[in-house]
Length: 130
Image (tube, rainbow, N blue to C red; front, top):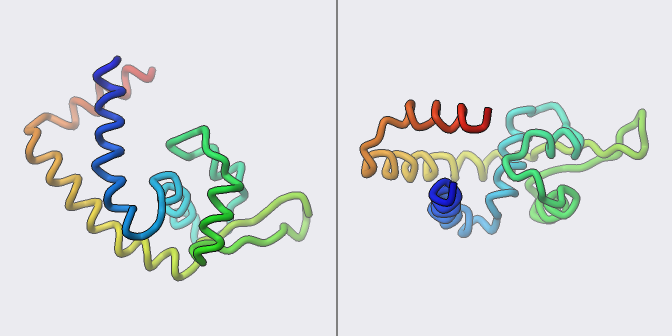
């Protein structure tokens, strides 16, 4: 278990360097990725939190920062004024388009230097989570 946690932290570090020049965190990237998957529809914060990789983030604060950077838009739901609707902006989509190839290159590098059967590893990790 310790090795799995160590490897998870190592992988996060490997990819964190890619996000840094764009001024976003891995959690913010994850929010943008989720919103891109729903685009052009809007999503409310609880829906985002349900599918996030990190279940502990303060979604409101993450979205506030992304809004300040112009990467997302936010509006109050017309039917339920207590509910927020969040959508990715063109600027957010553009940023993801720039980051995606860099992530792919880093992933390919990591996979090639390890020489493992990643399908088997993925299956074992899925089995571990039950």
